Amino acid sequence: MKNILVIGSTGQIGSELTMELRKRYGGDHVVAGYIVGAEPKGDLLESGPSARTNVTDRQSLEMAVKEFHIDTIYNLAALLSVVAESRPSMAWKIGIDGLWNVLEVAREYGCAVFTPSSIGSFGLETPHVMTPQDTIQRPRTMYGITKVTTELLSDYYFLKYGVDTRAVRFPGIISNVTPPGGGTTDYAVDIYYSAVKGEKFVCPIKEGTLMDMMYMPDALHAAITLMEADSSRLVHRNAFNIASMSFAPETIYAEIKKHVPTFEMVYEVDPLKQAIADSWPDCMDDSCARREWDWKPQYDLASMTVDMLEKLRARLGK
Image 1 (tube, rainbow, N blue to C red):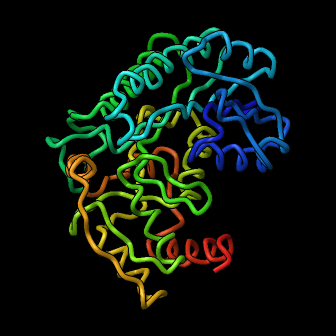
Image 2 (tube, helix red, strand yellow):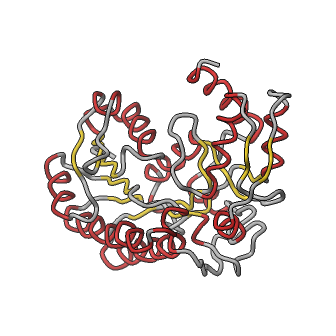
């Protein structure tokens, strides 16, 4: 990667990915793509170039790619799972019509493309324990439908046009920097904020609900190292299962209580979030990613909890 465009650079993953890429490749070589109303601010604005890049506006993509001589695109434009259910037409417009524009521009200008998929691409019929890399995918949410389509469309552009498309299936992402914004796994971020603030946590997911999760540093590492990987080794391009930890609400609660003994949690289950969570895997088999591009996470629940609490206490002055 020489010149990189991050579409969705002000979002949950994009804001941290852009800064990490600038550390590795230099600020001038990583462009922060944004939409009107979500412009870069602070370090994100000052540490490198930015450009308006709305995936539903192909011309804005072309202008950025040509101006900055882009060879790699990280396409992170999407609505999160809960939001997508309330705005299904917008979820499709951004996730699929927008992806089509990105892939067409990549085909014309010779760019590699990373467009993440998700554990949401699976469904109730999918094996939930050690979910295989290649298995049935029949999601029943618009979010999941767009993710399966993302995988298939990205494969199509690689096989038909030779566009270097690559992707991972992200689990729930836990960040100490960017607050969550409408995802089913958001509770696993919110719970840390409640613990640090000394508040009782109201959990929207019922006890015993297992879901794959990942700490943001590992998610960034996966997104970067996959794009840096030797193309000739890749068999499963779109998209790789990647796993780090799997836990239920009571498990993360117990881990936090080791450090915050007075912390309390109660359950008020959100039916929509619970239905989505029940359709997702308990844990994924990521052996293909480990074999094909040496994927390996650095954090487990215990080490993530220590780091999350430390970082949030510092940020919130607790």
